[in-house]
Length: 114
Length: 115
Image (cartoon, rainbow over all chains, first blue to last red; front, side):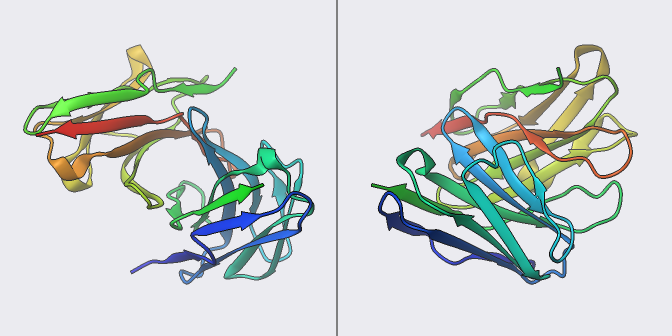
């Protein structure tokens, strides 16, 4: 069974802290994604990566960075957390290959910044 | 501008009743179309997808969706809803324009099922 895991289900951090959200997939997928999910806004793409050490900005990259040192792991970094980054963060992966866009999601990390 | 719209934020149906969730898109050419479900506390799971061919698509958990080009719609249906279907449902689209294209998700429809 395919699996995407995220390091924490719930996280509480203080304003100004550096925050790391980790995501691991066991499906040997090339593509990995970070979304944030907010009520009424759906899922918004923060960053994605189509290969190791490669990254592309999504729709809302400001305030975030990412790291992909190994194929199975994709990290989202909040350099200096702010209260407006309180949200649900979802990681996803998908195989490469044109026409195959199904994404496999982790359970999410609910981050609260106080 | 390209967009995907789910006009219903919240829908309540009785268990055993039929269900239809609406999805409309605005793209130059027919995009690839998807429906995902998110159960409480879970990530999203793919229900079904449409790339081409038969406009009525069958998915998991007894769901189906119909692509209507004339209406730019891809509505999700289920003939008889079960209490376990209570979840949030997301329509998603990918432009069919070659190369890798990112997925755009709708804002979601939350389904409540009452006994």
